Length: 163
Image: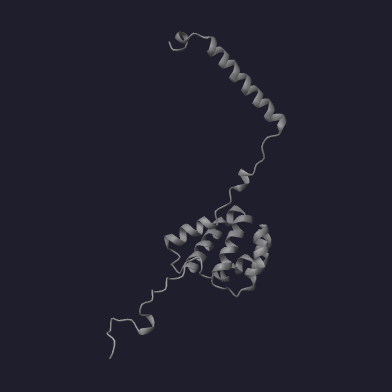
């Protein structure tokens, strides 16, 4: 007695099919480049100049694998002069394209590459508040001005205000 072609084998009859693994359960692809593990503490400190030193000179950066090339492009953009921004953008776009397996002319590579090397605007957000000797007089003048306008409006007849 044989089984029909559309029947599952005996070992899978009555069992629910296994769910595909969740993206959270997926393990990242291991890299065997020792420079990547050496870069991790430097990235945590934001030591961009040291990262450039570990990855080598700019003329050799084009020979880095895409993962390290992307790190190089971000570091170059962070510490390099504004003239190097175009080169860092192009390198980031090529590396993102290599990582995603799309052509370097792809819109996905273009958008993601440029976003990854965009300058961090945190510097202007981290500006400290003015000192107390400046803030307190500004607050006092604002309160006095508001109180004066409120007192005037409280005494003025409504007919004069809405002419």
